[in-house]
Image (cartoon, rainbow, N blue to C red):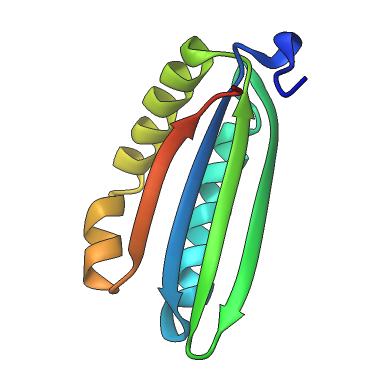
Length: 109
């Protein structure tokens, strides 16, 4: 059996980034700041930060497991508030630093 009914409602946020070597340290600092906020949100279950080095760039994958969609929505609101406080626009940061991103939510099937 492929699915796990206990996890049927869990949501997995999977973000994949291709990061130039020159900006890796700053990028990881921003990711760690974000994950510090995520880890204290209601419904947070676990997270992972993975890396694959490929020449002059890094492939970074972040995975966060949430109890359900409601937890994701609440966490998103709180992260956006933190970003506003820091005067940080993630879309601008990615574009200005030539960071390619693929972002999405996944569930068990």
